[in-house]
Every structure is written in structure tokens, then in C-alpha cells.
Image (tube, rainbow, N blue to C red; front, top):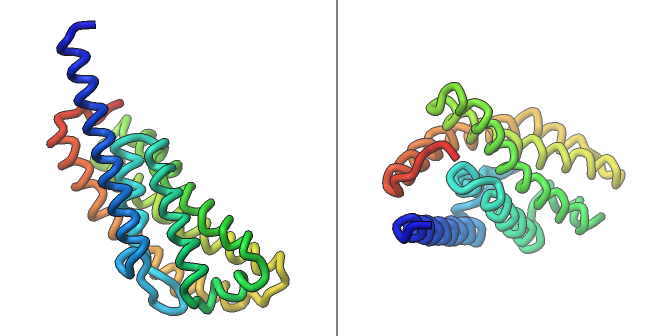
Length: 202
């Protein structure tokens, strides 16, 4: 292998590690402050899915899963330290189910976003940069509230409040989160790729 090729590979690895570290830091800052999960009772609006999606589409699903895990763990921390009219009853019945609900739904974000993006990017890159983030965001909303409803039912808690949130605030908040992802993720990914001078195709 030529020296120039080795240098390019080393530079790419350094850029990847640096970008991963930056996204992890952003995720932690959002998760440990009120910027990441904004309480708008009875549900929450989150911005933490944005670095997860950006990481997955820029650096691949493994990095996306790492960021999704960070999102999930900070969600667990929020659930155990902040009062929530929705999570509180489930936490009292089963902390384990709260952990599963908080982490599993976040791990699904990068998987869905990445594969939706890859599937559509073969035909239209610009559309994929919108569709992937939107799909990942809606996956988070559907999985989180869906698991909450399931676990409420399994533990025998009255699920009427969860159903009301899913049909009301959940739909509105999920739509706002999807809109934010559609407006932010694509331009950021495009700008970072351009600055790194990397090919958009893996």
C-alpha cells in the first residue's frame, strides 16, 4: 500500500473518531440538561434523536447504535431522577421495564434511519437525507409510546392516559420532532461531508 493511501486512511480514521467524540459530547450535553428532553406535559419533546441520526448516516449504523445507547441511558437517568406522570406509574411497578422501554426504542432510531436512507439514496440522495431522519424520528416515537402502552397493559396499570397521549400529544410531539430532524439532519450531514471531502456513497 502506498504511503499516500496509508495517510489518507489514517486521516479518515482520525476524522471519524473526532466526529464520533463530538456527537457523543453533544448527546451527553442534551441528555444531561433540559435541552435534550423538553417536558411539555403530558409528553416530552426530544432533540436527542438528531445527533443519533446524524451519526448513523455519516458514520454508519455502529456509531449510530453507540449514540442511540447514550440517548437511551440518559433517558433512563431522566426517568429515575425526574417526576413524570406517564413514566412514574410504570417505574413504580417495574424499573426494568422502564430501562427496556427507554433504551430499546432509542437503539431502533439509527437502524431504521440508516437503512431507509440507504434504500432511497440509490435513487435520490436529497430525498434520502429527509426520509431517513424522518423515519428514524417516527420510529423513536412509535417504539417508545408503543412499548409504554404494552408495559402498562402487562403490569395491569390503567393505560387510558397512555392511549390519550398517543392519540394526542404524542402525535403532535412526534411530528414536531420529525420536522426538526428533516430540517436539521440533511444540511448538517451535507456540510460535514463536504468539509471532510468524502464521498456520500459508502
